Image (cartoon, rainbow, N blue to C red; front, side, top):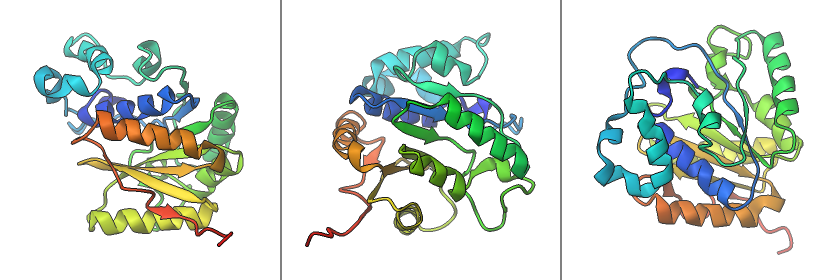
Length: 243
């Protein structure tokens, strides 16, 4: 995540999704994986804030809060997620992430300490899950979260919500492929997805959270119809071993 993206239309959907999860009683921890702004002119997808008749009804409280960004004196920074209570009860880890492997080890140890007591951790890397061309610890690796890192979170008992930018491949095939990989590598019984026009969010569920997350998914389906697609049923579900 970069501060420059705070409050864009993807953020509006993202916070809407997180708010639906919080509303069913799960405690959310947000691990920003914050990296420096790149000043390339990206992150200005905020035209929606000038179109309340089209956008406000998805979540009017969230929309009204984000409209503060219409003031040019208000900087783009993720600190407002906490200050404006965008996700009720959420905890945030706001340290910056570096490329070096040792620095990453220190970062995630501190993150899991800070977010202890959460039910679900949201990982918000710039790009998404690791790619083979960028090994952990190499230049540019701060743009990714690595399987060993989310695997550690899952072993600690957290459900996981993961931001994933679409690569230039067939989106449906990519989503199914990555969901299957996550389920297999993490040993998760169920992985589902929330699909938007620009990004996809993968939800890796702990068994004890499945009922609450099912309710959250129905809330997303109802409130965010046309903006966030909840794929019918889980993308991946483990076979019923009792059969």
